[in-house]
Length: 278
Image (spheres, rainbow, N blue to C red):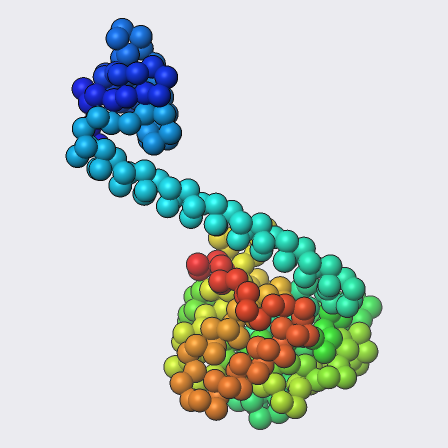
């Protein structure tokens, strides 16, 4: 707002006239004694406008600034709380001997897509070289807290089009270190298959991000990769919101609750997804 030539009263310097206003600085002439003040902070503390209408308009400016400052402080506080919660979560993971990236995502071929939701198990593939060549891959990080994410894309699609087809918790007795046949067995209860319509709403790269190359959306080689535990919680949370059948919504919520318990996560404070496509 234009304050040039407005008359003011200062608690110490008395009557004055605004002769300059440059961004966050106002210049006031107090009977040829020039003083500069921070705008609009000085108003309401040291300086009052003599014109009542202008003073009322300035109140709106001050109120807006106050609200903006409160929003910034609230955001700063929330960020501090999130940081503290994350540190606490990581400490719990250490105590529970849970790896912070103990979830696994598979790239399913066409044959696997036909059978996985009947058998509810996935083969980890074989070692391609070295002394263990042709032996099943051992998914060492997987434990009963782990979820298996099932994804696919068509051969003529870009990697960014990779869809989530379903997911399941691993079997309660499963341990990746001791799995000899390469089969990742599922939990008897916590299994979810998405419809084609639901799958189109859940793209893998909305959640996953390569921290070393944030803008890169390439799978490169390999049948699977590990990813952060929080990402699965984000996917499950979003899944509860796109399901329409009441019974399936309840199943998804129970899955989410169980997953968070197993991974020392607060089910009520899951951060928003921030994958490569976000």
